[in-house]
Image 1 (tube, rainbow, N blue to C red):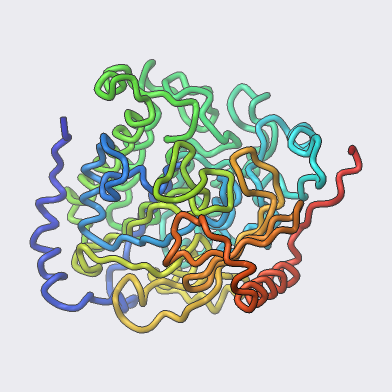
Image 2 (cartoon, rainbow, N blue to C red; image 1 turned 180 degrees about the vertical axis):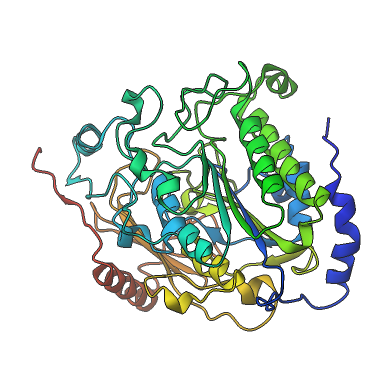
Length: 467
């Protein structure tokens, strides 16, 4: 059943050298070769939706598992929001969604209709948010282009305007597409939050139909391989943003049959095959050692995230903690692991510093570069990370804000003003609210969270006058 790949064989010698000594750093930014960067951003992939986590029997991800074995697994990685568009905006800008004023997914049904629908019967009305990524924001792609990188965006963008379901091709305003935000290539990126079809014809104005019945995940994998081939002399930055595993659940019939009708598991297998396709190409071109590959998800999974509580749309761990792998054989120690909390805002400064740039030249960045963790050199100071989500969701605890620092996490719900305090080291499932038992820690984190909200001028929900 498993698809055999070439790239794991090439990893063995490289990985052994990394394991036999301390992790090497990638400090030689002035060398003739700059590090290529491949970011694989999956849509709605849950914390336990990968084989290496060993939480869901039947998940088949040999290529992703090999990627994890070849590099560093981050056990406490977070998305900047429990839904997709804000995480994507955060990735592009290196800022928290609250700072960018894009805190919720951009609705395909249109902003006004969405706000009315979600606010109906609620004490508070949905907080204000933008329907696109402003062109005034400097993106990570624009910063990397200044360092000489060729940039490619392949897949889901969802930062290009409201009301995509009323379009025939997903294009609401092409001025908000990736090619206007620093990407040399855009294939698939438009206003769609989910594909109109997972099979060709795609009804996507940024993908040329090629062969009727072709599967979208395979097509995007092919396009990623082509981009790598065409830019093998480097340096390049490739953001492969799969539409899978977002609804509507859909996969080739033969793959679905292998899983006795489980379309979700079938979609994950197709995702894995295309991760393998990308890694095969990097191996074939002898680029593995000079390419950092990052595997990540834009928010928690929709179909269960054990042992975490909650799912996509909630501020519980299941809505925001995601799988994350960083691999660069020979530079990052194979089989390594980090439990340091990291989040979306960290990617911009990390990629920039790896490319030879300086995060200090972009004073708006709100994350930290992760080289000390990734390459095993230097310290990494504990810091707080934040979420601001003034939006109603049916999945559970939402319409609130959260902070994590060290082992502690605090959530404040806006409608009830109830405060939840959890020690994640002892209570990963967030079952025991320690707010009353530990008022000092509660007040400390609450003050820090509210101070941050004021600092970034976070948009707050207003009283719902419809009630």
